[in-house]
Image (cartoon, rainbow, N blue to C red):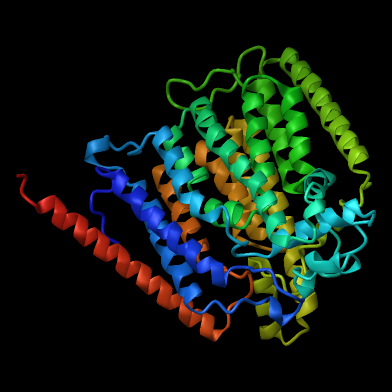
Length: 494
């Protein structure tokens, strides 16, 4: 991939990314997760040339994103673009994706079915979309037809707002996407603010946490419900840095009532609200932590303050949970339904190791996979304990520990989807300082962007060929564009 002065002329990569987004959108019109007449194999889109366009556009968009962040001599090694400019670029790149059918997943149709079920009086934590029937349930893949909703009552209240559109899946998709887009806009506002509090580069945080291809593909184009809890989580962390623990706890509870992993942020918010200095950052760029008499290690006063905050935050979270659950009228069945996304065929690194062990040992894969998943969760729990101990003993930055904790849950969990990585990437965007680490995260995000087919199903041989053709076409477009830019720069001034 040529570097033709990304740091000196970032506007060219804004246009290149827009070109990629337009190509992706054009391909998604035929290769995306389109509404279908019935469940079963008919849900699969015959993308054809659309698949080529999607992967060509994805290649161009991802390359533009990577090149846009390359620092150089004209920027003094800093991020080459300002936050306002990057926010405008995010709007440009997201705009072509707003009116499309869902891309890279059919989960949005499950959201619509669950909202219609709640409005119709069904128990969404006992029945699957098949109990609802009708045009929305027909869009849900067979594997999820009889599974309960794995989301909390907070999300189901949002999904119930789409119930009047149950007979119109496309309109319902647009409404859910509107909520996701508003949440992404909130991310774009919160990331720079949190970066300033933590002493990191606001522009770099915005680029990694909001302009990221995974955000565009899965939160905007895919309308996944991870967008809202991520925005709530960042708002809670910002409230914690400003010593507003009750607000932070309520926001984290709301996020957890949409997707359960958000609960991991509650102890981080408590630590930050109880022990942070409240200043944006120290002069050395590290997030300030109280170590004087009023801090954790500073004597009984510090511990009493921490315990008061812990009790108040626990109460605020509990009240929020009870209130939202009462309004939704769903009960607490969602706790037992959290394992719904985990099926026997679900892929994850631990599941893959379990299947490999079963093949080598000649045993039944079900038991080996279950054992590997349990071992992975045990290791993840151990990692979380080590991270917590490091924060308490060494004063390590709690938000960086949160990003690593989410990363452990994503990698070692029983099921993996590319958009799950955003739970690690978004807090890492404003908490991590090492340039090499941030670049590794960027490259991992770029790789994950290519792991899902536009219709959300596993690829067959023909689709892999089409995808490879699109990737090659996108790479050729990047090379030609870079060469054209270079030739223009060499033209003598008239």
